[in-house]
Image 1 (tube, rainbow, N blue to C red):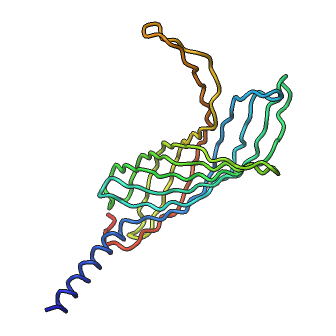
Image 2 (cartoon, rainbow, N blue to C red):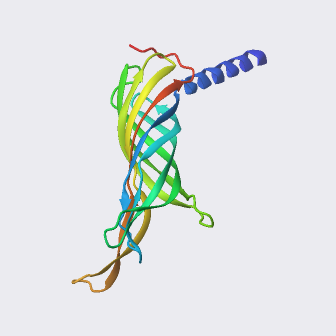
Image 3 (cartoon, rainbow, N blue to C red):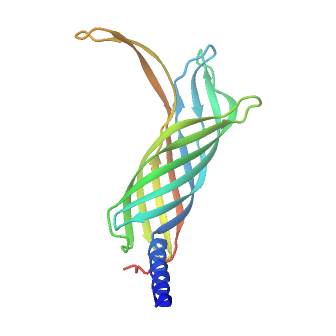
Length: 217
């Protein structure tokens, strides 16, 4: 009797593990990143620009039912930072900076998981570790969020392709934009002007799925 119970318990656990395994997706990706600039004035410069460049990374996702999914994504980029001097002179290179972006993403798929083509929308929150390659200057980690979308193409049960575009603004700092006073309730507050580093990624990757018994139509 005990052996039968143990056998049933192990069988149930194996089935649950198999069902969970089929929901995992691992996607290495590579592509291009278009970076924006920062209108931050100093005594010598009035704007900073981050150059465009190659980006690459990997994501590990878990499918929640037919249309939803969550994933952890890491993306890396190295780019030069240039500054526009006050007076309209040509920009100069200041240093190289690496970015390591860590995002927790929520995905909404428009078709069931067994469809050949699965377009989706993405929303993410996370952190961006900025590391300037300058002696004596330490890096900084800033809040980042992401909006994007793309499509998955199921080649087989365990293999697929994925293309994606993503906009991810990284909060850098806030500067004073003056004061705002409430004419009805009274009181005045210092109003800040938030500065974001805007990044646009277009990437492609190969998706590997673990386990599963689904079929692709």
